[in-house]
Image (cartoon, rainbow, N blue to C red; front, side, top):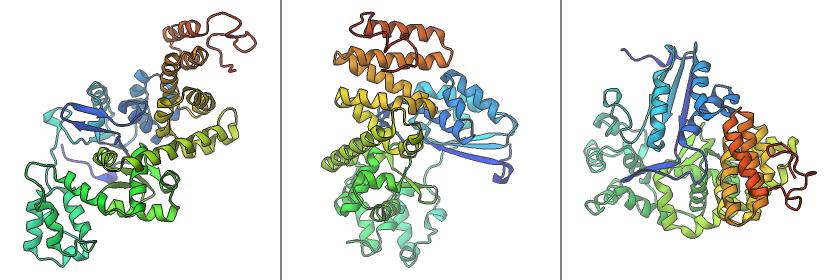
Length: 421
């Protein structure tokens, strides 16, 4: 079948999952919080299609609803970094893609083999012609022979090629030979990226280090303002640092340098090399998120747009709340409940409730555990999942009981009512 030209499609949707990494033992989750990769992907597709209500439906119904929404359209789906999906999530995605209507197509990318070999196209090293083509003025002044050496030393890997070219004229890399020396001096058998990142971290200025460590906590594409708030830097300094990190292939820009994410392989390296800065930015992230939630949450519906705009800087802090003081966690849950319901973030709400319920049980906070179970059951009731509603009603009763001392009827009318204390 001949490939379709881009102009054939009326809409192109790009969704990338960059919250997990593939190691020798399989996929390891780095997101630090709640949703599975498949749920994230389906929800993002729904939002891109303007069908936000699909994200509120039961998970097993969303693929069918998305197929219905795509039917009759000419849409290209580009689903990136699918190695982040757990193995049990891949089959439903492949089934979804195979059932796309005739006018729609999908391109799936992954760093490892995840599907049928008959349907895959392996992208290995860049061709010599593509690798030697350059718009870098310093690299352009080198000879073809030197660039051939660069190609061989980097094995045509785009990240190493780009990094080496970006080092020319910077610091002690005053010449092409200096830049190549970094590659040549790597001990045989070791990952050259480990060596490169080590040198980079030592060479970072304070702004670059702060910006990188802030990105380390942000699992969603983050605007400059989000990174600045967590890094503690002024926005102009943050913007410059992020652009410099992009040149070094450590930060990934989207939307014309409007939002950024961290290259996944850098995260673990940063935690080892700069643990004090990572901890400092994490503490700043948690405090800022708590202030935003308390100021704009609860029943302050007119302030929900502010919470939605700040969500990329709040969502990563939820894992920190879950690991911290239980009273603070339960306060956050209560403050976010209306927001998560009205914004259609039911998956985040349900996952937060379940995890916060477990945390409350572990600290013998039965009242909070009951309310978290109640909210989780309420979500199931909105989805008409009767069996699950009954299960959570039993969990509510087990935690709250029927004693007036625990749950006065004036405050608690029905096991799964919407009323809150």
